[in-house]
Length: 220
Image (cartoon, rainbow, N blue to C red; front, side, top):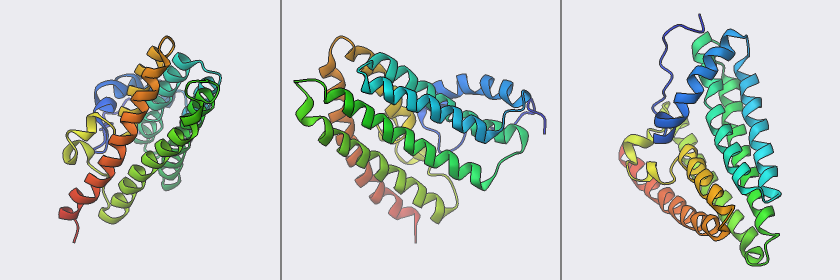
């Protein structure tokens, strides 16, 4: 299949930031990389590397850089699937690798934020409890989505089923985008990042409870 062949690149599971922002950047990138012969898994590892460097930047308290790199990794996380669909090189392992590396990047991002906050006298006491709650919330939502996919044999349609949470915390795309915004502000006012994380964590846990309820009507 040609890299320039018209194929649907937006998935039903894409969140609003993926549709409105990330895909606008990832599509031209994936077209160029596909023509250059880059494999989908190669693009996955690029997204992973960018995310890890972003986590290190957070650990060094380079809040703005950590946020920007986290967003770049989030954008690049869509490139691998686009290359696969453009070139007909989709694979079960590629799907698996994409999912687990996305989770790993979010995990190390939280750890990086915790390492950075732990160096602050004002926030060091809550740094690791905050990180633990953030990791727990993101992984509970991810587990719910992936289990839905394995049971229903379709991607979890968060924009359809969670029209409000979709703009707050239900997808990694939204969480990372909001994190980028507050991380840039945190360069001058670190408390903005801290309280934004608290709010995000609360919403993630509420979202998980809502997800348990809403999918009941779609399953036997």
